[in-house]
Length: 334
Image (tube, rainbow, N blue to C red; front, top):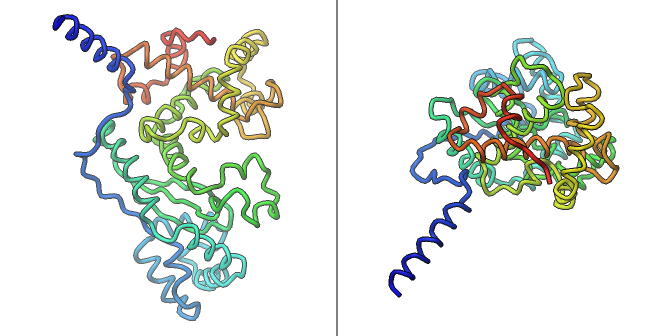
């Protein structure tokens, strides 16, 4: 009887280990100093009459980010003598003040965002201990930028994440398929995805459909590794129903790409139709979400990692032989 209990317990343990998610690792012992700078406060809080002093302080303390910011909002460079005048025009603009006040309402303190990004970058440090951790800036972009990436910097345009129904979005003509992802909870996964796209480049491979969707799938896999608790649909920018549609139509999508000889198509427009934003994915039914082919790429990468347990995340992200990834994945939808 005791032997039977021990055997059953052993089977339960083995079964649990098999089901364990390999990306759910412990980062509690990892020490990380993540710096988050509320750049919008440093611009809008000082009185406009002291704008020359504000401009001087920003150039002194944040020269690299200020250079990128001036480019994003399309004003003169910081070294231009007219820069304080342009900066004053920006921070006294009625709409920009309204946006800033809304951002203070939506993001009253840095804790939520800082904690989420700190946890994500703890995972990053776990998998890539020798890579640098960026400084994080939040800012008001004049609706020009969601995520800005520069050397050791991530900038977050808060005005692109003020809620799907924020009053200015429809007035600016931003389509609904983009607005659906313009909410605060989307920021951390967007940051990690954009960071990965600059740290792990596409490489010299043919930019055909299959290589593109596997590359995009690698980025999704990376984000999941950094944020294991993040829902898959949010990483992709899908609704839960859109994610379910992809799962229900996986075999049909893959078969379509094969039968219409699209996998190795290198035409830029064809690639964009399959992996770019839009109301739906061209070539697939109108019920499909845009970037549905990216979901296929992520499934290929998941299968590759499942069937090649000797491969680490670092090896995956550095691997630009997309054909080999496809072959060694053994991917079979359905």
